[in-house]
Image (tube, rainbow, N blue to C red):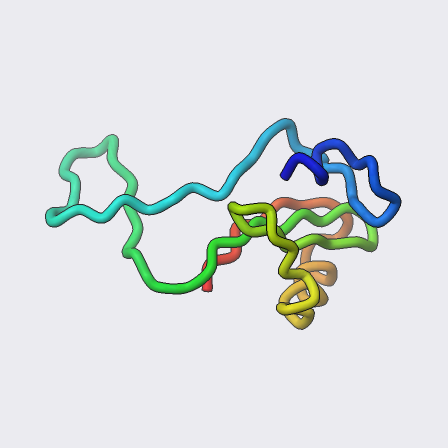
Length: 92
């Protein structure tokens, strides 16, 4: 995330958002109750932030690994859908 936020490298897109990170799931044995809780089912797989700026997209894991090439079809689809600027959490 630091390299994205800094935008120092020519190949790196500057993060258009102040600060964002992939949030980890916490395994619990019961579902939270009450109106102020949000939860999601935990699946095995990747948690990746997608940063779209203009005609560029970066897919970055919580450990700052760049998965853009690994998931090229996802990156391409996000470019088409984002119409210029977006941040998306991709869970696979």
